Image 1 (cartoon, rainbow, N blue to C red):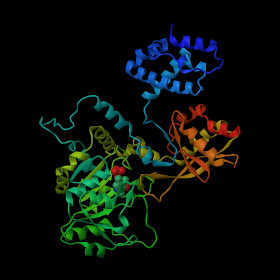
Image 2 (image 1 turned 135 degrees about the vertical axis):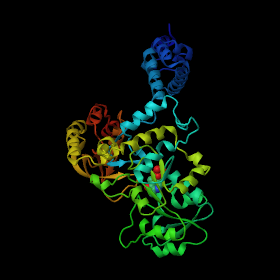
Image 3 (image 1 turned 90 degrees about the vertical axis):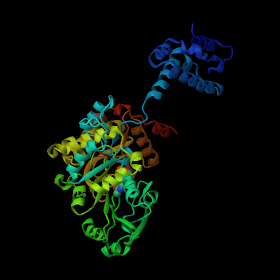
Image 4 (image 1 turned 90 degrees about the horizontal axis):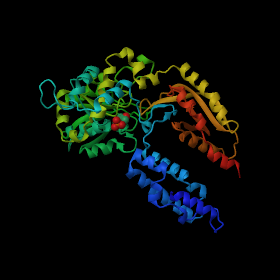
Length: 493
Ligand SMILES: *Cc1c(COP(=O)(O)O)cnc(C)c1O
């Protein structure tokens, strides 16, 4: 006989007429672990996890019992075993989860930026469960260099002499400055002292690399003569930074890489450009706004170009440095390279992603980033039309759902001003009183779905941009789980 049953029985017939359980009604831990449902859970998940959660469950129930808020039905053997199974499932559920990005921003930094191509996912899966030749040269049988796994591809795709890869582009910039400009000056235009996502501010990166920033020009205008005047015996290099997440408009003037290269080279200095996104192909060929490519930057005379792996390139997080053989060699020799190096996991994904570029004809189909950016508007509109009646049924009469034309964006700082014509749904509370709370409740309910749906709020409406919803059933099939709990509370005064 198990303790919980006894407790339940004793509780219901107790002289104390209250209908809530007391701590004495709770089973001892050991008794709980022998309830049949719990024993089965232990057989499946092991004693350590289940016993730990059982202890926590009993402690929580004891607190409730002391407060006089624990109903007897909550401590029947079945109820206890179900609560325990729930706790164990929650402990094992991943905190990092798939979500539906309906924000309209394709490369959303908070939502993991580029979605990996199938080829990259398959490569990671195939390679990670066994040893591999990460740093082993299969030709010579000697120690190899992990960079060499992708260097050839990067050179082919950018026209560079040499290439090296690190953890992300912030690391690429940091390492480049640490290797090429320690204790010396780096000349940068005041219009390009960018901050990218709080922790990456060019002046701070410069300082942590041990380089000294020599600012030239003004926020809106910098001229070739400004760079010329800043060069002195202390100068290590000239640097351009792609102002990726904002644009200075109006009375502006910047010095292009092509103009700057001869100035740098006349003084025997290298020109480095941080492209940020750095598309490997000409985006205009796909009907997208122009974005500078590393190949063009090298042709324009840059000695080194740094860019990200998970922005427009559409691969894993990575920092790519391409350019002159001698400079890349100095970068690779810096001790920080070891600390910032790429791990085998993204490296496998990077190689597979870069190989997609070898067959450019298939790129728009196989590279999710490009596929989403070039998705035909008619397709996006059709998705919105399919979702609309389903959402309408789930949300009426409290919310209106209407289809709207939207303006999406590439994201991750790429082309901040350009907009991608898109389509989606606008959701708004019918009752204007308390509409802020009602809108919040709706966002919460969508975030609480098995596959959380993330939209964006704009002018008192929740906008769901359908560009990144390629499998419409992913959304529709879970609408039955939508629970607008807060709204009910609000409706019953
Ligand atoms: C995004 C960006 C970075 C940082 O790249 P991460 O890969 O996120 O580290 C640096 N510079 C510029 C100009 C960028 O746009």
